[in-house]
Figure (cartoon, rainbow, N blue to C red):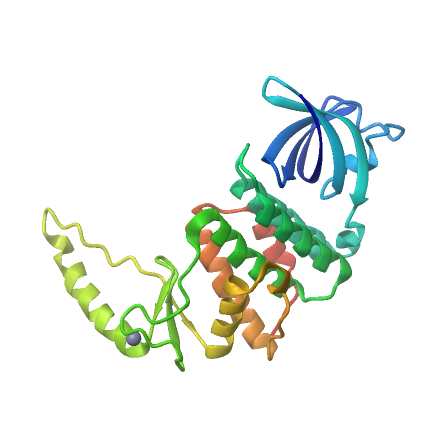
Length: 272
Ligand SMILES: [Zn+2]
């Protein structure tokens, strides 16, 4: 089978001196393992189209479960993501999460668009990195099947609050009153844990979120794909809180850590 597809190079592993194995994200088939023969040679016609984070049109030939790239044309290199170390680090983390979420042979149109938009904004510097990162995280974790419910309090149905008690673990929020009632109930249940057959666990992780952070979360989750990054945060404290809750949420639900994220966090821009 030979097919021409557009894809983003999410990962590359060198094989010998001249070849590499790549993880490529495509809209049609999700993530693919693609072998690029000779692509590390400077004179290879595949050289530019197979650079990490590039978006390229590729002619792929499938043999067994492996794809081989025959020809490649670079569409966008997102070269300026590398202008700062922080930008390059964030791109690495985004590529890792996308690679984690994408499934082989399952279309990934929305994820592909999300990665392309995030890369574009990092490269152009039109949005602050923490905002790009947080929106990407909330949207990516939703694509992975863990969309939080930010419509109304899980207890009473109120939606317009002064403080939001966001339950990271279950992806719902409560108003203060319902949160207190719920906490009392959980304490009661937790006290029964000492019973030999106790199965109750409180185990909740709660983030207390302000209305402006909550509005940003709602925007990231519920806006149409082309609008998700189009909002302003009123100050750096709001941006910092928004970034913190998004990161906690995705890490809780992906249930793993990312070395690329740890690296980004050691060098990320200071906000407050
Ligand atoms: Zn309530």
